[in-house]
Length: 249
Length: 317
Figure 1 (cartoon, rainbow over the protein chains, first blue to last red):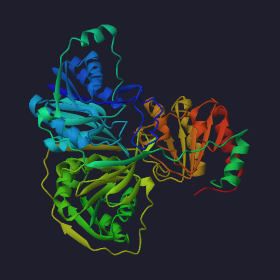
Figure 2 (cartoon, rainbow over the protein chains, first blue to last red):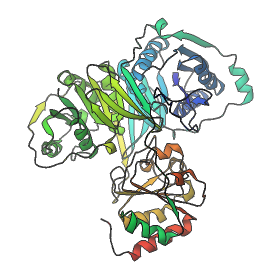
Figure 3 (cartoon, helix red, strand yellow):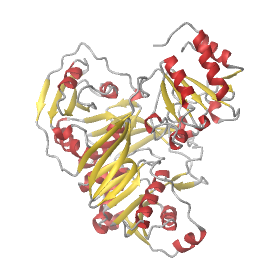
Figure 4 (cartoon, rainbow over the protein chains, first blue to last red):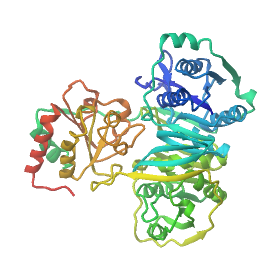
């Protein structure tokens, strides 16, 4: 079994986002960047399947600027076998990313594609589902548990009401939730070894994928700021304020 | 222009967020049709027919639609898409799951999680966990949109009499199978729509300690929420998670207990009308957005809170 894992480089989840004064976006200069958190879960799950001999090869792919390669390198350091970097200098919408991934998949022919359920920058939550539809594959979104069986995969999904379990025919796309597993840290020797693993460089043009954006960003602004209120001295004061001032109880 | 809203239901009742999606659709055009794909979903159709904003119901019956598998629902929506300028669903796990499939097959770039509709092609959506709002214009001829339910009022549910048109089911690909759903049934109000929410975080320390939260929830008729840390630690099940990757709630009163206030959690609750924070760490970021902050040990504060509430002679219903 071959597994492809898609990873994205995003502003680190701990960074306080600052909106640009001119309304064109958010500040990214000198801002810490990391792998999109649930993409780390995607890599971990793939590597675990390899360690239990269910998967033979794990290929990590990213779409993005030059430095996006770091996310592939990190995936290689935790156990992926080789990488693919599709270079893109500007933002590509999920639809375009899905088209790029589709081209790669037609060439690589993986049995399962893992990726995070949502990127924490644009918060779109689309790429996996779009890719799955374009390929005519089954999908298991928001996965918190995966069990690979012969030609089938059982996926437990986190849904609004609780948990849902589906059985998917392979090949399938699985988008991972943060609770799927505990991503490991790369050890120093493995980071060194990863430097020798191959990363293939491509462009959307090489692949013949149409990545024209359809959505025009008009402006980005800060949401209305919420002001902190008061500190109360004790529980009695709190309840009194909730009843008499805020009138919510 | 006609707008198609894809309704979520359990074959008996409509899920409430579909009413928010219907109301959002009315900001685009009056000609709102609602697709109800299901199995023996007659009662859902009747329920939606009574919604005055709805002009027509499209009912499609098939056992393949019983558990609304995205792979099965998508071909039907795509088949209907020709007649509509906009296809809308709620941005909950239902809409998030199938809408991008529809968009991809129609070659449309979806606009996700819309919180404001400025016009037929102009929308506002939060990005970076709600730390920025983007105003976007969709240049696709047809739009696929998911709307954040808590950002739109619920459509009124009585007085309407929309006709119900039966339509054929579409072919399904038979590539996925529903096995089971484990629902956490509760007598308490639903988290997404409750007027009061009380949430616990890592500070709760154990699942056992959530009984302190539950007792207050019962007293206030509140829903119980949690931070990701509390869910990850196994104190409470995933359907209670509030935040960027969990649920977004906008109650009149949100009580955060033992929650430090990571930006990912704030993304799910900072639009609440009144926020209360109870935390023993006076420097916790949650205090910077709380209307009322109580710096206290929650294991002392929660029992006192319940006692004070018991003294009040009002009962919340």
